[in-house]
Image (cartoon, rainbow, N blue to C red; front, side, top):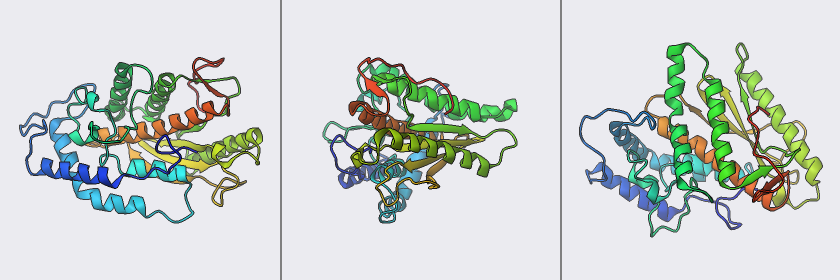
Length: 327
């Protein structure tokens, strides 16, 4: 359903872009000046939560991991994943090795590596961007997502559970993404994502099982609405977030009933990735993973809205923005 670009080709991490990014990273490692201080300033910006020393360490680690990540991203099992699942997996695996944000955002994210931002000569549309409305709200929303890891770590001090903070942060970013693209929901809209937060005393297996059931119910609603004879490209990829403490796991369910690996009664979801939102030194990368996944969800919503399916509409149609509730 969802693709990596505006055409019908499957998204693959562009080899040229990867080579450009890797060569830029090597310059960083050899001491080229890209605005990263060599001083001992460990102070954090309260809203961004990333120190300059942390940035240097992230650049170094990702450069060393490039070959391994690229190999993992391009060697998925044949016919086991849908194209939309491959796209999401590639985006998450290769974050940091291709531009994710527009160049003119760099001033607001000055602690991030230069390679995170697009260059004028690169024919790459950043996945994280303002779609129609102002960059101000897009930047503010992303900065808010970057502050999530610090809030989750505070839960250890306050002796509170972090699941609710993570859930609210995901939903808040989804609401911005929908407003930015003028996506509205009519009554009876079928969601394309769902969240389950682990309850106190609930096992991880139980939490994942409940999320799978929700995804299955949503898939069945799409089948009942779109019908089996509908063109295969109309069936969306559903995304699920299961939150267990500070850990967020991302699962997907292919709703295409004609696909060999598509949804059927009793079919489980596919595990895409998981992140520890509270892990120190990984604030940016976990937040970017959530942002990339939500941008993928937005693209799916746009395609459904443009096709008049699922109850989504655009341009201020007779609909409302999504409600803040667990599905």
